[in-house]
Image 1 (cartoon, helix red, strand yellow):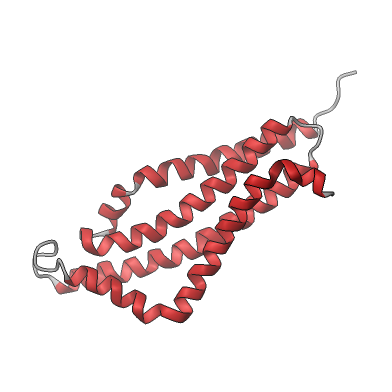
Image 2 (image 1 turned 135 degrees about the horizontal axis):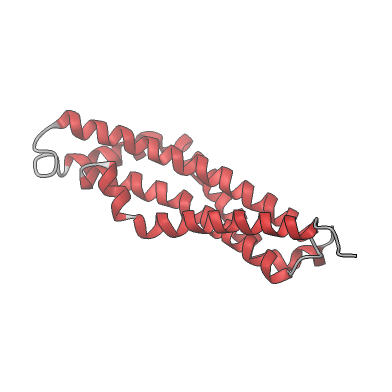
Length: 172
């Protein structure tokens, strides 16, 4: 595979690597600032414990704990989906008998979807303590989650179509 084979997938590659870099960034932040990050989530909940949680500190703590789980989901999803997008990009680049536009669409969909979905989990975790729960946070960010998941699914289906087209038997 040459740089010319990969060149049509440059933009998708950038987004895939940004997605993986997000995962790495989350991991580094966890190692360097875990206590500060958890403290920020707690402070966010503490600021509204009387109004949003009705004074129930146990409920606020449960939401803060779940928010930390969402931060970890952001790290894991970004790592996995960025890697998946990069693997698809390399596979799609090799399928030269298939329309480059179709392959680019598959690659870009996968990469953008992965980036958006990883960040969705981070933003949901960050928003949940102030909103009173993770359900409210996810609902408030559906504008990011739904298109991201759709892009991932479209990218995966288009990749399967490209594979099918590349390996179909020529008509005699």
